[in-house]
Length: 313
Image 1 (spheres, rainbow, N blue to C red):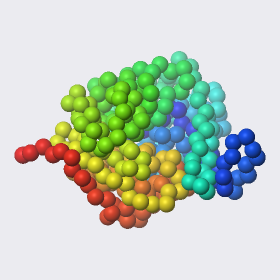
Image 2: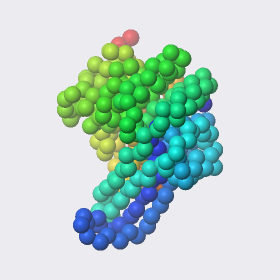
Image 3: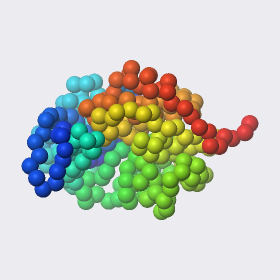
Image 4: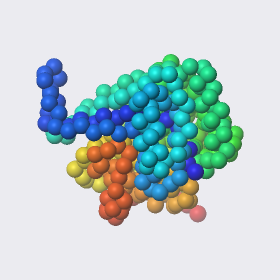
């Protein structure tokens, strides 16, 4: 079982319009609602990959109940902690021009007894998990070191953990040296405190983190592709060209693919191909966190791996 942690989930409302014009009346041509937030997207993508998943985090009110019911209906087990306020709603506006505008609510601060309830459930589920994924932002008001605590507890249990967040929560979590991190390029620059552009430069910097004790580092670069570094190899894969419909959950789909590959002991090259292919397939889905296996297979055959560095035998 893969345990996914979504401390700040959301109901995602995706709206489509011809053109988004600030300060003027904008009419929508379509609206779709689905469970959302990075960790929830990872859970749904893992479900598409046929994995046994348990989703945890904080939910509340009617919007939280909607997320719980939607996940369970699709076959995902849940162990959420209930709060006394509605789970946030996020709005993603997709214009026909190709722009995506995300309007994200902050999320409510859980109470101390709710945090204690979550930690109790986390420790119970952790014992049963084959791998843990922590993904997404912290609710407002929570200590930025909370993810670090979860990572340290997973390591104490001998569990591999993939971590994907942002800001100070990401930086502090990285200090706990999780098994793998998957920042995007902006988050990666924040962690290292300097800018990057070329894949070779990103790979060298990722190598710094690997030498510190993080086993795997993947840096997503959007349409430019992904850099993947382990102690044995540094690789770069360019993203396949496509007419994207919705890129909101592409990074989350990649995280799900990495989790899938790790528990199946796939080779490094196979792992990167799968991550980039699943990410590309997710860009063709209107609903965040979902993708079609046939799209993944089609893209996988088109991905070329460029090895930047490889450990000699």
